[in-house]
Length: 180
Image (tube, rainbow, N blue to C red; front, side, top):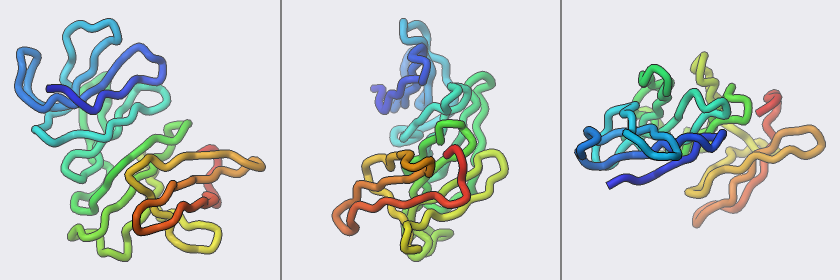
């Protein structure tokens, strides 16, 4: 059974999570032409992971989550790296339009993530530098189960989180970040 399919930005390929061993290979992340063919295994997985896949804007990489650990998959070489230390509870990653940043949500309650460090984070996928987003009043900008949306207004980048059961919708400017 296949799930969590996502389209490449150019519309030519699909990446998906395969839960079970099949004639095409073991569980994991696969990549295939929109016209079909034999899917190519990019990253190993299991019944649950990796999920929450997102293509980089240039379609060279995928970001996803495997057991709450962020992974970046190089599609051409089928290599996987973990840009963050394990145990922080990464969730819902998404690329910036220029592929120079990834936003992700950090779940509370993981060993390396005290409850007060939960929230929405900005990660430079190449240097590993990260920081938490703050709204206009200096409060943490929290994500939700829906993706966080990016918007541009008055030549400034904003992130909008639609809110959830325990927090209101929020809008935050991303100071010091150009071309998010």
